[in-house]
Length: 572
Image (cartoon, rainbow, N blue to C red; front, side, top):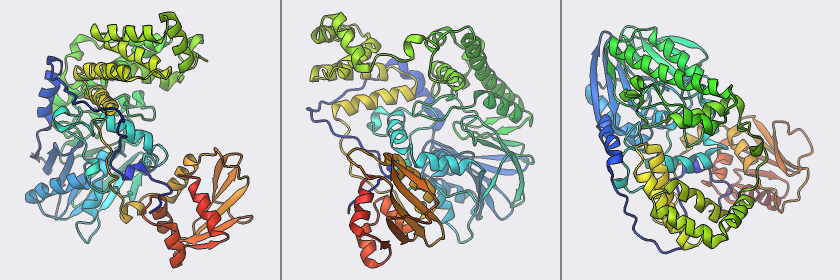
């Protein structure tokens, strides 16, 4: 089947196999990662049950990345966060059901991340009465964004960060959970059918529920307060590691000041039980208040000190070297750098307020990567001399410098096998000694990718018609626009109009080397298409063949069929 557009969120992660001879990479376990290994106990797979003043709360931890919570009500239960896959949701609910088999009345998403939302379809398809799905009003927007135009790069970087393609023996954990299971089953996201902006009070199955918008790790983050249970579900605004004020997989700017305010809001309820979406619960008012105080004060310290030094005109790389947490809070187990780091946070805060320009005039329009490499090579006495310095750096375990030297050689198209092997050595050395799993997994995955140890994987379809129903047609048209490559295409003012039987209309005009998407298709269409939204979605993700749909009459084409197929081919 010819695939015109493949959305990578529907597929298992794929790496290209290296042409060079593969060697087995031995990744050592050093004393540097003993604390990270110990941290894995935080995710022992189990369901914990708590008798709160308002009733039983069941807490599933160690299944995929995110925790899933079930609150018992009167002849019905609610689920808070659905885990990272249908695969994990089924395992979790098998255990939940043994605790209480009453129907699921509602699902609450604490935010948009897939490890909290991708298991939802399991619960929706479990019973005839569909549960209500509740989230912040912006949650679906961010899900569509990640599953749409940014998906290829976010998928690639997430794969490295979470160590998805690492051998099982080399993956210690991912900092906030044991491992990511998103690729083990079809993507089970279901669009919320009840949303709110600031706060929402509900009674579901006799459970009093108060929901509050709480920006932090995401802009759509909420927390759940169960007043009768004295229980707080903070989502990802606190977990037992230093917070990801910036994530290396890539994200929109995280509102650090808003995060502080959200924790202050959570503190005001004086909860007796705190059930985070990652790592274990905290029980007891004093313990919870202490943890929340430490967490919010650490975030504020990094924020305020970064701002103070920014206002002195210092550059982000200088500020990074000048900020570290005060020792009396740095020793808190809630601030070990098993997920976020202080240095990444400083850079993100700087960028969030002032953008990418450091303020140094030499960095406003710097030399190209290749031109800089050429000049570094000249200073060294040529590419061979630069290679000699790379060898010396690796021999001396000066591995960060080795990586930077190899960057120059790569830019010079001098990426010979010896350079590649030395770069692999540097990546393995740095990665295997990092107690931060994001860095560790990213470096080790990059080394295995270079080595060719991560082989081509057949594309495994994780699409379902149910998922496509929950992906907006607007999202897919945005993807089409961003996938258009104008090279060798000279079409100007060529317009294709789509009339969907749902009464929704879209058009794409090729003009000035961009694909202009519009809802206005009244006239001047070179080709008109009449079909169902779902049928066109299936074409875009490669489930259906447009030729077959046209031949069967499921898709009507007013104009040249050949030109329409050529048009689709421009978006491969």
